[in-house]
Length: 185
Image 1 (cartoon, rainbow, N blue to C red):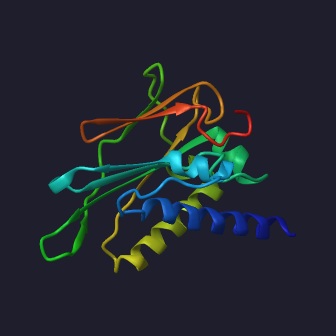
Image 2 (image 1 turned 30 degrees about the vertical axis):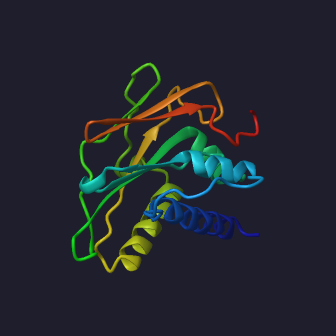
């Protein structure tokens, strides 16, 4: 397969996975039966915080065990990719989406991770997040909003010992590593 085709295929798989994680606005249901390592990782990488009348926050970490493969795995080991969506159900049933601001990401020792912007973001991650944004807009009639943050991983490794902390809106959402589903577990 041509290299660009492989990247496109990986980006499409990532897009589908990312959207599944971001759009999972329903309440958590049952546990998985005989989960695969991929399913364990995807389940752990998504945090759904039901804030009652104050809406719902969904934090997702697109870690290498969630997108295994020769193209994306090395990229996701080098960078921490976080998405955050905040939605609220209005009395008439309409869902509104808030802008997400003030996100801070750090490792287990409290060291902030360096956020990448502009040309510093690897092209494969630019394509992945842009595709996910487009699908989100289309599936929510232009109302859906997702914050994407891309950070240098530093001491954070999804399959190594440690922790990732995502601070947003007065909450500290944490991931203990190694995450379930790592081949190294």
